[in-house]
Length: 186
Image (tube, rainbow, N blue to C red):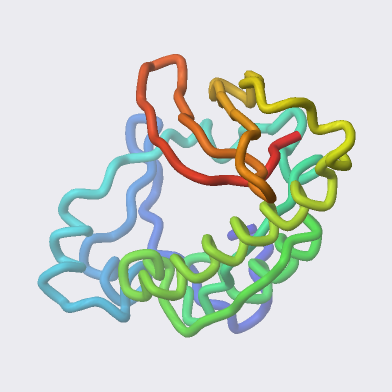
């Protein structure tokens, strides 16, 4: 992606590899990585960056999740690390629902509301999708509790309230729990 950047695209300030690792130039880091954040914060980010192994740039993903999962992508329109046209191309390839906002590569820090709004949009779309796949009430079962395992999550759902698709406790194998109201999860 960096080697094949479109003409006129910004070039990330990646220093030559040293001991098998790459690093962004500290002096050029603020403008390229986080140009929309306060300078003191970008200096801290530049000083605390974690080295990446050169081999990571050659890594291959066996089966990308976007091939089988719904995907959302936030294009950071002012990104000077990954050019926005490259971001749009990646999002299109993944079949992602795309949002775009002004922001640097650190948009998750500079524009947290935009990021949260996209996460909420994705969550709402998933809930709507699950509700569409919900079995008819005649197949939903009785008021006795049912347990379903979703990933590492176990859900206990008594179906005793009229019109309710699930009230109960949500817990994971690690023991974290939450109580609440949710829709049927396939």
